[in-house]
Length: 536
Image (cartoon, rainbow, N blue to C red):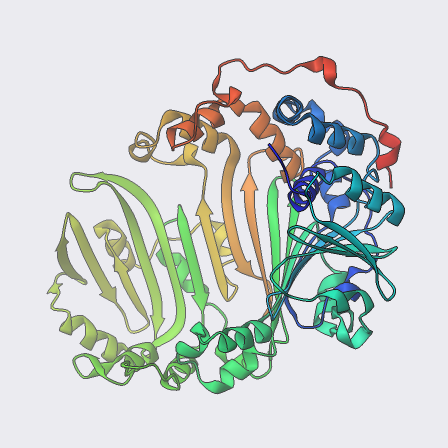
C-alpha cells in the first residue's frame, strides 16, 4: 500500500513518541506566533522516562505491535528499528519537546527539535516515493520543503510541519519577540511551568475567533458585556502529571481579576456535611454568594428568558436564588434494589438558606403532603421525594431514613473525614470508582470481566479548587508502586486478553491476536538498542 510522505512523517512522529527520551530542546515559544489561541506541548523526555522506554519492548503488546508492523510494513519497521538504535536517525531530535499550535486564522503546525539539517533532508528524500511532491527551497534564514499534504519549514534549531489549509506560516521562522508567544507574559508563565503534557488556551482569542465565524456561545449565553470583556483578558494553563498511584492535573486561570470577583466567593458552610451519611459514592459541594450570583443573572440578556418572571407563585428564579445563602452539598450515599428501576441511588442535597419564608412558599406551592416534620411526594416509578427545612437549612432526599436523621439533628460526625477535609473549598467533587466496594445489587448488573478490570485498576476521582484561580484533579488507581503511566502500560499488558475480549464485546473486530487465549510474541527479533543514545 502506497504511503504519501506527510502521512509517513506523521506516523513516524506518533511512533517515536513511544520510543524517545531526553531533555527539553530549543525554546519553541520563539517559533509560535503571537496570535495562537491554543498550544499543546509534550515533554517527550520526561514522559518517556516515566514509561521506562529503555525496557519498553519488555511489554508484550508493544513487542507484539512491532512484530506485526515488521510483517505488514517492513519499510516502516526498519526505520523504527533504526530510530530505536539512534533517535536522531531522521535528523530530528525526537527525544525533546514536541509542540502543537493553532492560530486565530486556523493555521496549524507541529514543532520538533532539529538535530542535523542535512540528515533531515536526506531522510525526506529517502522516504519519498515515486510521484510524491518534494521541493526544497532556500528561504531568508531557513529552509522550506514542500510535500503533497503540507509544508515543512526548518532551520538548525527546529522543524515546523504545517498543514495545507492555505495558511502561510513562513513568518514563524523569523519572528521577533513581540510577534511570538515568547513575548506573551501569561504564556511565558505557563511555558516555564509546563509538565509532561500541557495545554495553554487564550480565552480572548477564542472569543474573537468565534465572533468572526458568526457565532459565539458565550455572547449568546447573555452574559453581561462586563463579564465577557473580563474573560477576554483570561487564559488557561493545564498540566498533566503521572504521579505514583494517580493521574494528577492542574488547571490555572491566568488574568483573572481576583479582587473584582472576590465577593462572589464565600467560605463553605461545613455544618452541611454533618447532615449527610458517612459513606458516599458520588459527592460534590460548592459555595458561592447567592445574592451576587442573582445579580449576575439579573444582568444577563437571553432572548425569550426573563429571570424576573414569576416561577413559583409570585416568586421568580432570582427570588429563589436570593433565598439561598450559597453553600450546597450533594451525595449519593447508597445504591439499592428497586422493583421498578432495578437499582436506585439514594441521594440527598442540603443547602443553607437566608430566607426561610420564601423557601416555605415554594414548598407549599409544590403541593407536597405535609407529614411529621417533613413533606412527601410520590413522583412515580417507585421514586419518593422527602423535603424538610429549618430556619437555616433546606433538605431534599429520596430516603425516608435520611430525612428522619436530618430532622433529628443529622448523622453525628457526618460524611467521611477525608471528603470533609477538602469540601471546605469553593468547589469539591468526589467519585468512588472502586466497583469492589459497590453493593451486590450493582455489581451483579456489570459483566464479570468488566468488574474484574475496573476493580483491579480504578480507585477514585477528586476535583477541587486550590485557590481563586487554580483547580486540581486526581484520578487514583490501585497500583501505588509505580507512576501512573508505567502502571497503566503494565495493567494493559497483564490484562491484554481480557481487554481485547471486552473490545470485541462492545463492537471491536475479532482479527487481533489479543482475542486468543494465548498470543504469540517472537523474542528472537529483539536486539538490544544502544541505550547510551537515550541518556540525557
